[in-house]
Image (cartoon, rainbow, N blue to C red; front, top):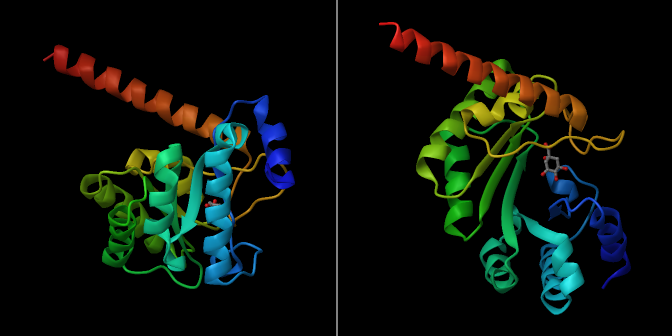
Length: 215
Ligand SMILES: O=C1C[C@@](O)(C(=O)O)C[C@@H](O)[C@@H]1O
């Protein structure tokens, strides 16, 4: 197993948490400068390591593959036999694309074999955030695979806390002090907001149930 994978394996082994292995490149908000061939080779090597080494396989639950790198289909085919899911991702930092365009990006991810489709956009306004939440609602109705829709930055915080209400399958939070994207909040804060939302939904549902019975 590679030393870096070993370190991650040791860190997560005791938690039994699923791991989404991610190489976030600079073009998509991360810190890694890498060309397409090297990107594809590196992710393929992670999958090969997982298929040859049961300990590595136990660590990696899913692999993030950036759609723009044009290798989602290839890596999804490689990942299939080891049962590792491919989460295709696209990040839009400079402007939020039109609603139809974001939906079609998510559809392309599914068509290319991803098991999860994710977009993150940097909103310039509350209108962009509302559009992103609408994308989640539409994509949930159209795609077979789970969809993740995140609006970054301060305006987008609501999408990180309440995206699930609109059909977004998961959210991202910080485990330590450093956020890997603007707008990420500490996991404890996100968990408590989500629990509060869920409890409110249950209260509302119980209220509607008793109101109907009272008719
Ligand atoms: O995929 C994600 C989610 C993310 O884009 C976010 O907005 O929280 C941040 C990225 O670092 C991470 O890899």
